[in-house]
Each structure stands twice: as C-alpha cells, then as structure tokens.
Length: 285
Image (cartoon, rainbow, N blue to C red; front, side):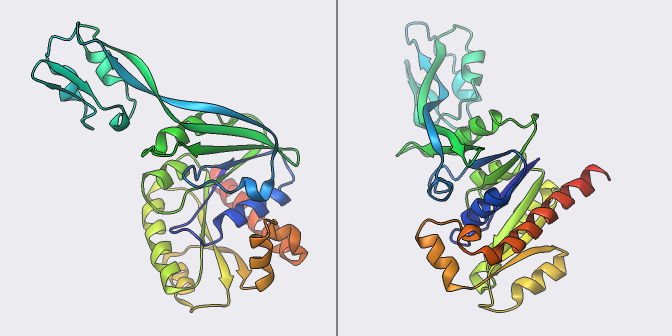
C-alpha cells in the first residue's frame, strides 16, 4: 500500500512524521521523498549505499531543413513550447512538458526526441528498507515530471508498503504526490495558520476519494479550531504529537523523534494502525 504524508504548508512536521513512521514500520518498506525541490528526509533516515542517477524529460529536437511551417506542432502545444515565426521553427525546451505530441504529429518528421535534464533520482538503503528521493535541478521549474518518474519506478505491486513524504501545499506537485496513494495523512498544527492551510489541503485532496486522517502536531498550542474543523468534516484524528521542546531538539539535531523520545512510540504505532485500518476498510468495502 502507498501512504502519502502531506500538509497544506511547510513546517508542520510532515517529514518528521514520515521519518518516525519509517522507523517503526515492521514490514518491508520503501521510504520516498517526493519533496524534490527541498528533499530532507535523508537527513533523518541517513540512507547508505547511495546511487545517484540523472533524470531527463523528452523534448523535441528540431530539424529546420525538414520543417515546412505547417504549424501543426505549435497549434497542438498548449504550453507554447514550440512555435513557427515566419520561416523559423523555434522550440523552448524549458517550457516543454514532454508529452511528445509535437513529435508524433509532425508530418515532415522534422521533430525527433531529445532530452532535457530534470534532476537526480537517488536510491539507497535505510535500516534494511529501501529509500528513494528526487532532487530537482537548480533552475528547473517543473517538479511533477521528476516526481512521476520516481512514482513509475516504485515497487507497487511487490510485497511491502510505500511511505511518501509529499511536498507541502495544494498545487500540482502536492496533487501528483497523493494521486496514487491508497491513504493520505494530513499533518497540521492547531493554530490559525495551520487551520487555514489544513482546510485548503482537505478541499484539494478530498475529491480524490482516498481515506484521509489528520495528525495534530504541536498539540497544546493555539486553539481548538482545527479540532472543530475535523469534527465538522468528519476527519478522524489519528495522532496528536505534543508540543514539547525535546521534539524540536531532536529535529534540530537530525534525530528521528520517535527514536530520540521513546514515549512517542505508542503514538506512532497507533497512527500506523489507523492508517492500515483505513485502507483495509476501503479494500473490503
């Protein structure tokens, strides 16, 4: 099963929740950092045997000698990544989404597959589990193509589960990270800012129709509005992580909280059980 750990904004504790879950997961697991613009799960899980490979996206290479200026390619491309100005065929690889439509539709075969570097895919081992993360190339604007390459290579149909540390927010990268998940865990904090972004995340992800529950991080600060919202929308609260200086100290030192603070283990065991129960209830419905 695939479990996505997401949040409406950064800084809510999403990565530490993912790292803690990975540390107590007893069955085979693949931990995936899909926050490719700012991956940091590896700082906590400390994977070894790291292998780094380049990731590319297909972009068109143009042969102007073959182009007749029919504009079929430019009329097809909704992202304006290719156009014909006068007699000149122009391509803008940084705007290309790699669909390959222009290459397929060109009647003169003036376009052939080329490639543009997206970033890196890093794999390794962490305490016997698989670890994968993406790292977007500096200057690259589109993260979903790199994320999709990672997702396409996941061992989804084999034994073992997948934990995804999703990028924060509710835009295309976050949607890409949760679309293939069997269960979504929303991490938030009981503050007005936390509620605002939690509400956005719930509105963005609930139409996907996946089991979804909340983790209230830094419980004990702020107010009860997040709890009231969960009650109103029937969102189960699967775990509460108390506002505790020792959690922040563990995080700042690069330690997995559930390992640094053993009293947190029952909380994450209960969270894991709730996630698995939610998925099983859907699969047996």
